[in-house]
Length: 139
Image 1 (cartoon, one colour):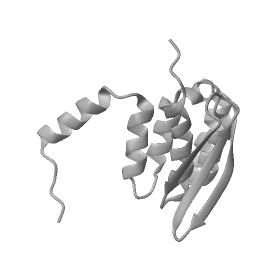
Image 2 (cartoon, rainbow, N blue to C red):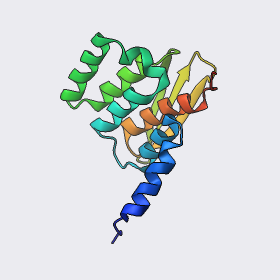
Image 3 (cartoon, helix red, strand yellow):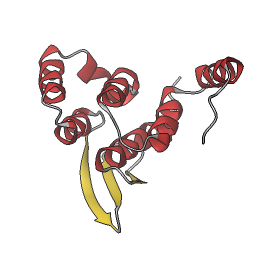
Image 4 (cartoon, rainbow, N blue to C red):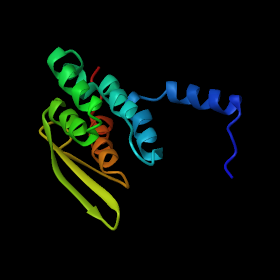
Protein backbone atom coordinates (compact mmCIF):
# COMPACT_ATOMS: atom_id res chain seq x y z
CA UNK A 1 0.00 0.00 0.00
CA UNK A 2 1.44 3.45 -0.91
CA UNK A 3 2.48 5.66 1.97
CA UNK A 4 1.08 9.14 2.38
CA UNK A 5 3.68 11.87 1.89
CA UNK A 6 4.65 13.84 4.94
CA UNK A 7 3.94 17.57 4.98
CA UNK A 8 7.69 18.19 4.84
CA UNK A 9 8.00 16.09 1.67
CA UNK A 10 5.09 17.93 0.07
CA UNK A 11 6.61 21.32 1.00
CA UNK A 12 9.98 20.34 -0.53
CA UNK A 13 8.26 19.20 -3.74
CA UNK A 14 6.33 22.47 -4.03
CA UNK A 15 9.50 24.50 -3.44
CA UNK A 16 11.32 22.52 -6.12
CA UNK A 17 8.43 23.02 -8.57
CA UNK A 18 8.41 26.78 -7.90
CA UNK A 19 11.97 26.99 -9.22
CA UNK A 20 11.18 25.17 -12.48
CA UNK A 21 9.69 26.69 -15.65
CA UNK A 22 5.92 26.15 -15.89
CA UNK A 23 6.25 23.79 -18.87
CA UNK A 24 8.63 21.55 -16.90
CA UNK A 25 6.17 21.31 -14.01
CA UNK A 26 3.29 20.58 -16.40
CA UNK A 27 5.29 17.87 -18.17
CA UNK A 28 5.90 16.13 -14.86
CA UNK A 29 2.27 16.35 -13.81
CA UNK A 30 1.03 15.00 -17.14
CA UNK A 31 3.50 12.13 -17.02
CA UNK A 32 2.41 11.23 -13.48
CA UNK A 33 -1.32 11.37 -14.25
CA UNK A 34 -3.02 8.14 -15.22
CA UNK A 35 -5.72 10.15 -16.96
CA UNK A 36 -5.84 13.89 -17.61
CA UNK A 37 -8.68 15.75 -15.93
CA UNK A 38 -10.35 19.09 -16.49
CA UNK A 39 -8.06 20.94 -14.08
CA UNK A 40 -4.99 19.82 -16.05
CA UNK A 41 -6.28 21.44 -19.23
CA UNK A 42 -7.15 24.66 -17.41
CA UNK A 43 -3.62 24.70 -15.96
CA UNK A 44 -2.14 24.19 -19.42
CA UNK A 45 -4.16 27.12 -20.76
CA UNK A 46 -3.19 29.25 -17.75
CA UNK A 47 0.56 28.62 -17.89
CA UNK A 48 1.88 27.80 -21.38
CA UNK A 49 3.51 30.79 -23.10
CA UNK A 50 2.28 29.54 -26.50
CA UNK A 51 -1.32 30.03 -25.29
CA UNK A 52 -0.94 33.65 -24.12
CA UNK A 53 -3.12 35.02 -26.94
CA UNK A 54 -5.83 32.44 -26.26
CA UNK A 55 -5.86 33.37 -22.54
CA UNK A 56 -6.61 36.97 -23.48
CA UNK A 57 -9.33 36.10 -26.02
CA UNK A 58 -12.80 36.10 -24.42
CA UNK A 59 -14.37 34.22 -27.35
CA UNK A 60 -11.77 31.48 -27.11
CA UNK A 61 -12.24 31.17 -23.35
CA UNK A 62 -16.02 30.85 -23.81
CA UNK A 63 -15.61 28.10 -26.45
CA UNK A 64 -13.08 26.32 -24.26
CA UNK A 65 -15.32 26.60 -21.18
CA UNK A 66 -18.26 25.16 -23.14
CA UNK A 67 -16.19 22.13 -24.18
CA UNK A 68 -15.04 21.64 -20.61
CA UNK A 69 -18.61 21.83 -19.30
CA UNK A 70 -19.56 19.10 -21.80
CA UNK A 71 -16.62 17.07 -20.47
CA UNK A 72 -15.26 16.84 -24.04
CA UNK A 73 -11.60 16.86 -23.08
CA UNK A 74 -10.46 15.60 -26.49
CA UNK A 75 -12.12 18.51 -28.30
CA UNK A 76 -10.81 20.91 -25.64
CA UNK A 77 -7.26 19.59 -26.09
CA UNK A 78 -7.58 19.98 -29.88
CA UNK A 79 -8.78 23.55 -29.30
CA UNK A 80 -5.65 24.27 -27.25
CA UNK A 81 -3.43 22.85 -29.99
CA UNK A 82 -5.20 24.98 -32.60
CA UNK A 83 -4.85 28.11 -30.44
CA UNK A 84 -1.11 27.77 -29.79
CA UNK A 85 1.28 30.33 -31.27
CA UNK A 86 3.32 29.81 -33.31
CA UNK A 87 0.68 27.84 -35.16
CA UNK A 88 0.80 24.08 -34.81
CA UNK A 89 -1.38 21.12 -35.62
CA UNK A 90 -1.93 17.58 -34.41
CA UNK A 91 -0.17 15.65 -37.14
CA UNK A 92 -0.62 12.13 -35.80
CA UNK A 93 -2.53 10.41 -33.01
CA UNK A 94 -2.37 6.62 -32.93
CA UNK A 95 -2.91 3.92 -30.34
CA UNK A 96 -0.50 0.99 -30.28
CA UNK A 97 -1.05 -1.76 -27.73
CA UNK A 98 -2.98 0.56 -25.41
CA UNK A 99 -0.48 3.41 -25.61
CA UNK A 100 -1.26 6.67 -27.39
CA UNK A 101 1.38 8.40 -29.51
CA UNK A 102 0.77 12.04 -30.43
CA UNK A 103 2.84 14.13 -32.80
CA UNK A 104 2.33 17.87 -33.10
CA UNK A 105 4.01 19.82 -35.89
CA UNK A 106 4.75 23.51 -35.62
CA UNK A 107 5.91 26.33 -37.85
CA UNK A 108 8.01 27.72 -34.99
CA UNK A 109 11.62 27.19 -33.90
CA UNK A 110 10.81 23.64 -32.81
CA UNK A 111 9.31 21.81 -35.81
CA UNK A 112 7.63 18.93 -33.94
CA UNK A 113 7.13 17.18 -30.65
CA UNK A 114 6.13 13.60 -29.94
CA UNK A 115 4.64 12.27 -26.71
CA UNK A 116 3.52 8.88 -25.48
CA UNK A 117 0.93 8.23 -22.77
CA UNK A 118 -1.73 5.68 -21.88
CA UNK A 119 -4.36 8.45 -21.99
CA UNK A 120 -5.23 9.94 -25.39
CA UNK A 121 -5.74 13.51 -24.11
CA UNK A 122 -2.58 13.30 -22.02
CA UNK A 123 -0.53 12.26 -25.05
CA UNK A 124 -1.78 15.27 -27.03
CA UNK A 125 -1.21 17.69 -24.17
CA UNK A 126 2.23 16.25 -23.40
CA UNK A 127 3.25 16.89 -27.02
CA UNK A 128 1.95 20.48 -26.81
CA UNK A 129 3.83 21.05 -23.55
CA UNK A 130 6.94 19.53 -25.13
CA UNK A 131 6.85 22.20 -27.84
CA UNK A 132 6.89 24.89 -25.15
CA UNK A 133 9.61 23.09 -23.18
CA UNK A 134 11.86 22.85 -26.23
CA UNK A 135 11.31 26.41 -27.42
CA UNK A 136 14.33 28.65 -26.88
CA UNK A 137 13.93 31.24 -24.14
CA UNK A 138 13.75 34.85 -25.33
CA UNK A 139 15.24 37.54 -23.10
